[in-house]
Image 1: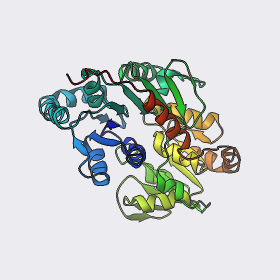
Image 2 (image 1 turned 135 degrees about the vertical axis):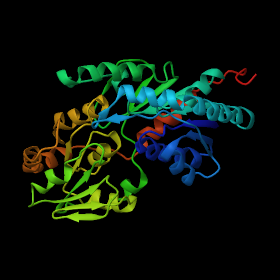
Image 3 (image 1 turned 90 degrees about the vertical axis):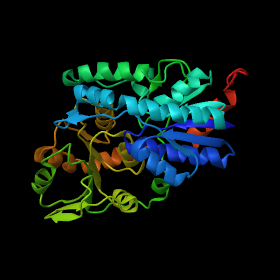
Image 4 (image 1 turned 30 degrees about the vertical axis):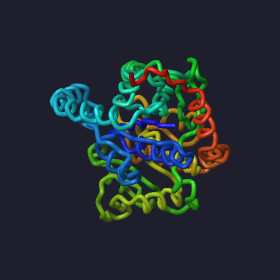
Length: 358
């Protein structure tokens, strides 16, 4: 089957999990072409040379460690003319050289609109649709209500009326809309093969634009050892070790950590849960999906949610590690088996009108 796969460039979690699915589809004999942008394009193009087409995607702008709606809109308007020209050329190339039978979108718009124009079925695979298509069993705190309303509107408007939605989630979620199946998170092969242990360090993943005083906060707990990724530096500040990016090194440190401190990004939290690592989650302000993940981490007893990084919060989290470790032992996932089974079922049911490319 010829499949067009759309992957957004914003956030590498989309790219890493899409790589898993694309690898599987190719192994099953499907012909897959990919559209993506920015860092995700570079990552996927290296993994699948000759199959990945660069488009210009949508990017989020930040201000004072939070998502800036105004700056994001201005960035979108400023780059629109160039982006439209590049995307139109990619559209024409795909139409002439590759005629897909079905489109898979990981919260990506170009592939979705391509599908709709040619009356092709769309299969949505992502975690964001849990906000729109499932019942949520957590309280939405007052400070997150506005972000929740915005997030739900955005998610609802993204890839609407798809043939089927495969929604990845590390927490139990009940679909409230048809054509929706909840599956476990997509786990990359390196995580599946990682040898887990409980070391003496805490893995921290942050970015310098999000938490200016992170090192100072961590230094307030001198009895702990912190390995910090996200600053892309190789430095040591007492008990805080800043580490340059290395996928192999990161996975090794994650698998051997006694705990994880991060924002609320779905991919890392899912991998931490899969590896049974307690989580201290501090979501990026105004990103409701991150709050959702963090709130479920706390609800399930897998860790704690805090609105800010503070020494007292970290101390409280680390004090309760035995309880979190106990609860995480109850989490079970048979890698990606269920996801692949559901995907094959949905692909088999996909019907392509004969006039798609007339």
